[in-house]
Image 1 (tube, rainbow over the protein chains, first blue to last red):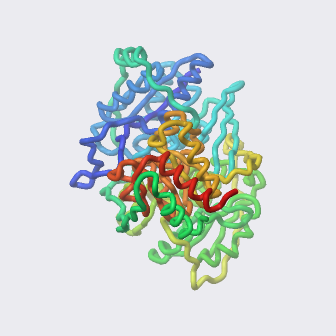
Image 2 (image 1 turned 45 degrees about the vertical axis):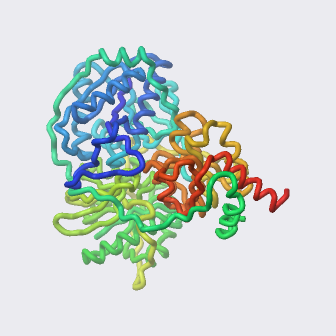
Image 3 (image 1 turned 90 degrees about the vertical axis):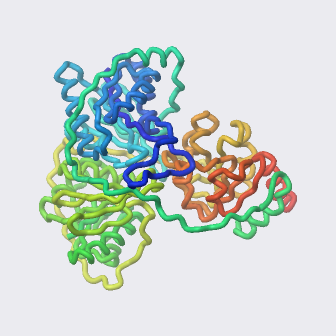
Length: 254
Length: 324
């Protein structure tokens, strides 16, 4: 089978987010970058599917040239082929992103590469639009299940499970299909050193899609206002038992 | 007209749907247009009484027994037909998994932009929204274009308020014209056996552990404390990545969002991805060796010290006072 995974490069934020002075972006001067978490699990899922069923896996991202770092990370985990849809660094909204991804899938199809499964993250960590996978499915007239946390391929069908507040729900869909993945579907492996070395040498296919105005335009970013509050220090180390129990009583938990 | 997509359980709108109605009514009043609602799935019409008290003047009920099971594309096609017939200016869904999924299908079918997880909407030209990024750690002000404005409401961003001047409501039942293709994905609920354990989502007290717990075995002390308080154990993403706890225990942006009375954060640094999952807690107690850790500044109470020593001291004190 052929599996496509679409990923996004996002900053690895720590204890707080800082913005650039113009309020247009996160200040990433002191931050590393990573594959958005749900998508990292989609990559792991694709690698496991190919290990089990045979075939080929492709990882695709829309982003600046430096996003090749995340494509190589995905190849180090076992993805076979990588595609970069290179942007000039400006923001692409969900409609524009969808158009570029659909065009790339159609180019692959014209070249004889059809995908059985197209995997996305349920939502990206940074812009969190919750829609690109669904839009790609609609454009290609494929069925789509979002937010899956378990996947099994049997007899040309994808059996999936998703978690709800009160339990689980199941669905079964004929492939080809689009599935959007949530973290927890698997525990991604660490890349091996030989995997990293192999990924370094692999070629990345590149193209430059045309930006379109998709209709959702960022004006500025801001940080939510935090209510001022004070921290009550209860004590240090092992002699705090009575103070903490007193707190539990105050909060009527004991 | 402003149209709200209402989710319900047996005719009772979900709490997120009531938040949606509160925001949608204020928006409709500001625009000087009526508020209407779409209800899909069995016994939807019985929601009309509650919807009227939130200011809905017309409730559209989709009548097709195939819609009683959740089928995202079919539900979206039903919404699209209503949009094409009734021409709402704005369509609003909730930010629940289903709300987000149905609205994404609607946006895809209509090829219109969709703004997810909005906290504020300012109608006019341009039509402005404020929406959450990074699970709410960052806000984006954006212009939303399109002939119909599509958006979802961020969960828990609006305080529910009924309409003081609510009047009569009209119920319009219509049979949508759906194709077999719309039912390629149908979702079946799976009933879980009750394990008798307090669930992370419902617990009044959650004892969360981070890398500072030291090992998978280190969680035993946290389990013990949680059990003495009738609570549940959670963890940070670092802990699930290390394989110390299952992902189902993870609190944060890509795990559970919890709202207990007390969250006890043990050996957790307080990265924003984690805080997104626990900021709805009424109180936070941080136990950490590092008094400069971001979690300490965001907590209401703090103990500086080794997780194991502190948690053991607390459990022994509880035991001393309440011998079992």
